[in-house]
Length: 266
Image (cartoon, rainbow, N blue to C red; front, side):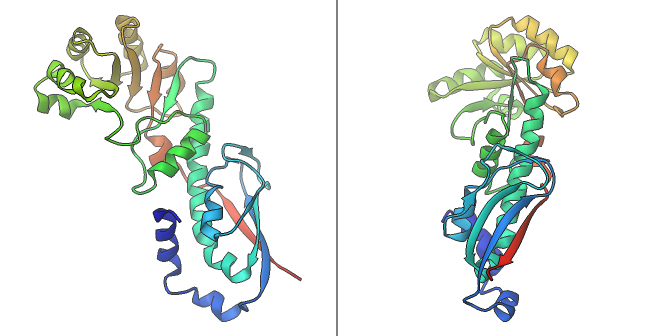
């Protein structure tokens, strides 16, 4: 069992589900199913086997578009087990399906352009791997998983290193992909002169971004970030940038409406 699932179960069940133990016989068998109560993109189904510690029958796959009324998964188990783990299972499914659903909306919004949407590190502590998997299920691309798998030089790194060129030169020995954030035309010029091959342009308007992309003229891969929303992501994607990134995909996704229905065996 992964630590996040173990923690969630321990947090909710503690020394025991007093309500279920009091009113449900220990040997009572039951069946149950998870039901979408609104249109959504489902994610997190693979966690159900781990939560219940037994096989769960999936009726959909992560990344599937589902309609209200669709059954997502079924399970047969002792009623006590189904009841004590219902909330934990729903918490994961609702949260991760929310991320996948919002990710799909972003992905759909840039359809037909060569631009890809990226997620960010703005994730729930302890749930990054799950939320990034949900974002990928929704159709966006995962950016770096953490501080360890790619170099991303941001404004505070530039300040600490003493400038754009210094920051780039000092990170070359890492052997990792290097991306640098530029926030002014002077920084853009310096980064290109220093041989930067991946630029993060932050907090530009779509018009400004289009102008900077034309100036870069293919000399570096371009990612746009800062204030990217569903309402404007298409405009940013049409600037000619290679990527747009939005922290909203993970930090602002709402939980989707999913229910669990239990049916005691006759």
